[in-house]
Image (cartoon, rainbow, N blue to C red; front, side, top):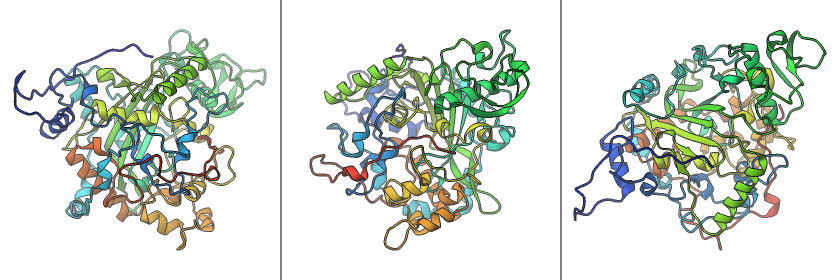
Amino acid sequence: MLKCRYFLVFGFLAYGAAGAEEAKPPLYQQVLDGLRDKPFVLPAMPYDVHPVHTVYNPEAIIPPQCYTRTEQKHNPCYACHQETIPGRENAMNDGIQQRAYLFSEVGVTNHWQNLFEDRSARVAAISDAAILAWVAQDNYSELAPRLKGVKFQGWIPDLQNLQQGRAAFDEHGFAKDGSHWVAFNYKPLPSTFWPTNGSTDDVMIRLAEPFRTDAKGQYSADIYKANLAIVEAKIKNLDAISTLPIDENAVGIDLDGDGKLGAIDHITVLDHYVGAAQKEFIDTFMYPKDTEFLHTVRYLAVDDGGGIMPSTRMKEVRYMRKWQVYSKTMYRRYYEEESFEKDAGALPRYTDLGQHGLDNGTGWSVQGFIEDKNGRLRASTFEENMFCMGCHASIGSTIDQTFGFPRKVDGAKGWGYINLKGMVDAPNYGELKGEILTYLERVGGGDEFRNNGEMLQRWFKADGAVDHEKVKQAKDVYTLVTPSKERALLLDKAYKSIVEDQDFIFGRDATVTPVRNVYDKIDPKTAPTLPDDKTYRWDIRLKW
């Protein structure tokens, strides 16, 4: 839907002269060889070849978890694939994916071959001291200067000291460097983003300049806080929301509806934004134009007390920007057309924006950076960015293609750097039990593959049933989904071996031994599928 723009990628590789007769490896292998041999900040690409032709897996949007053996009773699919909820812009309506493996002829083959690799020997060769030193290194600070040095045209990381995590923000989540990025506390989506399954992460939001300024273009913290609260209320479809302290006199609007201007801590007037953005388009379940998200994926670091925390080193830096806002009618039409194309056997395709990443088709650009073989962050390749489309373009449970912000702790209490300690296992809308307890029941394990032995040992009985009382007695979300120090270091070592190989196109899950309960190839006609009583309606939002 966005206009198509193409950029050639710096650092070309030429394999022989034009017309040379010698056999060349497949284009994807040429890209992989370039990543291994020439670790540039901008990936080396085969000369004069459009990136779409370098893809190894044309169905890279199907994540590894979709190849799970459900055996007619284990359902990890519901957290992604959902029927359309009335009023949502997301009309993908893909709940049927819980009931059947509806893949293309390409998609029935599991291309994520790293799931079946045994890394035991490589993991054993890395000492605990070595991996602890590795995850403590800063690979973020140099990324922006390196990108500027090669005149990178996409978004360049502009939040200083982000490698420090919590220390880069004040108590309310506002970046100390004045960049206007704001961190928020949210509950990680089950279960890929649970720390026990390999990574820690954080997410920041930034609204466009009109949402931070008054009519004269002057920055106003009160206006920014008010608009952040209004955006949150609209994304969650709330009638009122608590907010960080705001002086209505600075905003010039009675936001709590009490008929006077003063200091407030909640907002009930939610039909428009404030400040210079007062006339901007507003609707439920949709972000305003030029909203940005910054997401870092990190290793599992260990503090002095043996606790697990986000590492200084980053596995990935991910960035999204909403370049264009469309009406819900247009979104519905987009999903309808996409469904027609899929039924016709068309493979997924996304507009390549070159150094700006990919256009996901619904107004967002998605761009990423990932570690090179030496651990320095580099721009992601076309296929590595395409992998992100599996979550930010192709599932029905998201709200305006996002996960973290709809799961933010509601209102004022949720502004600040992510902190799972003290966080309750809140249920989802429409559910009575805690989300984590519900997930463990429906999946039969602590991850989609039911491969996490530590979670099985901690929260399940010998007969495979969930230990309800033990889960309910857990202190907080941190206790429920954070691994032991021993497991954390194993996962860090496993992922480091993938970094050394640079074969993210074969999978980036931090596994040590081959994963059980996953298909290498699916026969949709014979693979056991879930009956209706094992499928669920589910809302990504949480009742805090």
